[in-house]
Image 1 (spheres, rainbow, N blue to C red):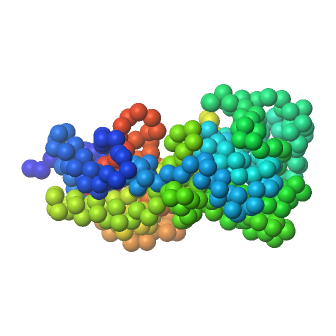
Image 2 (cartoon, rainbow, N blue to C red; image 1 turned 120 degrees about the vertical axis):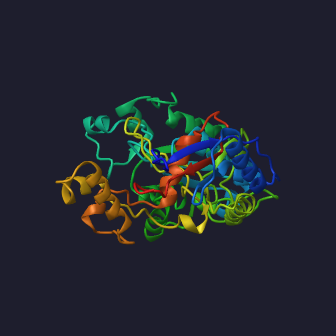
Length: 398
């Protein structure tokens, strides 16, 4: 008699060698997954998901640029005068290196920070302190002097950095003048300059629209900087500097360029060597929020820049506890199990709007799986830039 399966989704970090430019990533990922399965004694199955972190994809592509490259692109777009840099996130890894390049390409930066927090939840000050000060963050524009008078010098809870001071010093050290203001309305920057780089990630299209409608002369987002090679550098045609990370003190690793072929190649190699039809995706930041630190993880423009076709769409699931508490409230034990199993087997292909699916997660599969993979691989020294997810598409009846 076949044993009943007692586990559901399993996520495994797969160790890989350090990836360098020019490495055959599809072959390396395939080898590492198959070798791990053989060494650890597990099998691959149809619809397993192999996820590859964007970092090693960009590394294999050699997709880097320098702060000098960024400066040149900024000078070409703005002419080297005064530039408003608005809505940047507060990050030494994500934005500071980009700001250095931008400052090197300008005479003066008017840095406009959103408050009390940035787009991904990093706080300059708490909302409670803003309330106590009688400030309306939706309308009030604060000068640096007024900000210091109200809130003083405040360091980030996790990094210990006063980002106002840190960003200001970084700009002046690049040989550029700086003026800092605090506002949440994009058009507030136009009282200082008509030339703007908006650095917001997920609201960037709206910000550009508002600025242009309000009379801005030149508006570029971070997604418009480094969209073409500069002096033979890397670039990202779609996202520019969005999704980039600090590589060295003078170099930026950009978000990977077109990588659909990579996921297709890995899918095909796994099929050739194991006979299994797996799904493959490239993932960056997960899309989740820390309730204590209030930080929303997604600083990349998307969770997944490339994935195989089987990962298109959203989950189509029934809520088991809803069925147990409502449709089958009078059942228990084996009868309840069989009734729920029958409901799952006979469920509609599209459950949108049905009460039995209420409370299931209405998010893209790639966002859900990418978040799981980001948590599995971590951002430190685990050495597992590839994640194998098994059983994700199974349900109670499998």
